[in-house]
Image 1 (cartoon, rainbow, N blue to C red):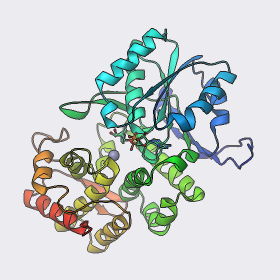
Image 2 (image 1 turned 120 degrees about the horizontal axis):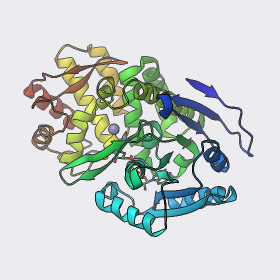
Image 3 (image 1 turned 120 degrees about the vertical axis):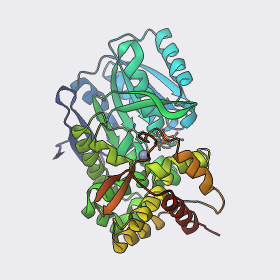
Image 4 (image 1 turned 45 degrees about the vertical axis):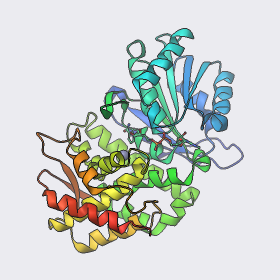
Length: 381
Ligand SMILES: NC(=O)c1ccc[n+]([C@@H]2O[C@H](COP(=O)([O-])OP(=O)(O)OC[C@H]3O[C@@H](n4cnc5c(N)ncnc54)[C@H](O)[C@@H]3O)[C@@H](O)[C@H]2O)c1
Ligand SMILES: [Zn+2]
């Protein structure tokens, strides 16, 4: 459900929407808009966030946004501690979580405190994990600053750190008190990170909503250029879809698994590139092409729909050179994925634009052929 809020003007027009995640007594709103920082503290107070706040962010984000949040919170008499860590996926570790625990203990952060995760998915997952476990759990506010975090990772309560033996292996479900999505943050985000966010956005259209997929076909360039109306529409629709699926299956025991479209192949592509050649969202884009190829070969999706999927994804400038990733590595890594059931690889495959099906029996040779297809299609030389 989307509500238009009557918010006050602050120079520039404030477009402000609210999408609710319905989870009984753990329900919470996602606020989407622009130029929102000035009303953050007031919103915290309105949600009963404790006076003691720990902001966790990284060294890329802090210079742009930390000061404004601190100032706004202090004006409202919040007692603020800031913890600034280095950027990057490697920080999503027990070691970094422990360093944050130490800093919180030394600063005397008690149980009546809240964690504000100011950053992308790495900060959201890591500080969400800290909030879930520190002194048996603190309140959490998600302030996503990347497109991927705004449309996906800040919503739904999945928080985790990585283990040397696997990504997101140590974690919890810990829902935030609210999500604060200010699209102005995207202006400072590198282009490659915008592309990563678009990976998850295309995924939503392909899984749930043919109309939204068609909107992306018509508005892709506007989205890449961060046209404000387009960004707002996309944020709202994706937040709504993520909110709906979270409400239906909070702990991913059923329907929420469809969100793994593009991820079965994508995770293996990421790992085969040692998490350096391809970023998560880029790998998901390629993964969706491969999975659409598999679906077409299995007779599950029409050629026309498959062509539309491939054409849309190929318009997104993912940098990927011949020989960067080897099919044999991807195949090997797929057999280790934690989402296999009894050794069988589970695939979420598109069966038309806006609808997917979970399939457990996919022929090995088909997977191999799909990889040759995407690795060939994306050769830039
Ligand atoms: N919990 C979930 O449901 C969920 C869902 C999807 C992904 N994830 C996780 O999200 C992580 C990826 O998140 P991400 O793509 O946001 O990457 P990220 O958090 O690493 O951020 C990408 C880069 O952008 C920088 N940055 C962030 N915001 C900025 C801004 N406004 N301006 C300038 N620079 C900025 C960061 O410092 C970083 O270098 C992965 O660890 C993935 O596992 C979690
Ligand atoms: Zn993802």
